[in-house]
Image 1 (tube, rainbow over the protein chains, first blue to last red):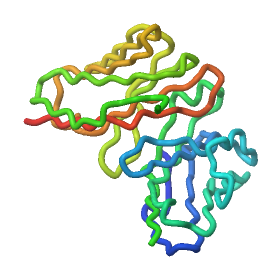
Image 2: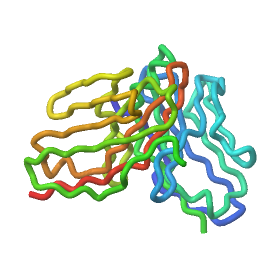
Image 3: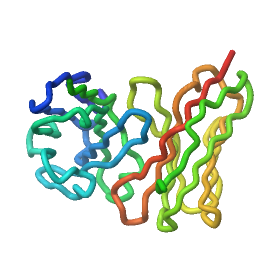
Length: 117
Length: 111
């Protein structure tokens, strides 16, 4: 079992460019969560998705950020027109079904580290 | 004020000592409490979770929850250098899907 796979592991973008972060959940998991970790801060919830559905996006910034989890393929976190404040580690986690208790047993990926120049 | 407070450390202990970690929180609706370990440049790894108040033991790890004081603890017995990492507490409400994390405590276990 390859676990939660995130790519790219490191991404460098200039201000105004777009960043796309991908996450493949563990085999058999159909629930995906995105968290952001800013330097010297804890993880902050961004969005929770199931296949083809956004369940909770209460942690997503109102502008420039979007997420999807299509029927086929990985979940994508997209950041348009990046700014320096977007520099952070973005972690994806997955869980099996049976929500909300599945949120107790999240498996995290290794993260994607975005640097905005 | 943050919803979940955690001393950032670092907490330095000699090998074999007991490591004591804790978090305080302000939201009385939190019902599920987790502890994660995060090595540098890696993703968090779930150590254990507990529901409501009480104790839970798993190997060298013991988690305690005191809801009346809004205080949770993690104890690591017989600490090893491989336990050197950042430990994150997290919690959620009964119906919620999102976890609220503390800022993490960095632990150094010296051989």
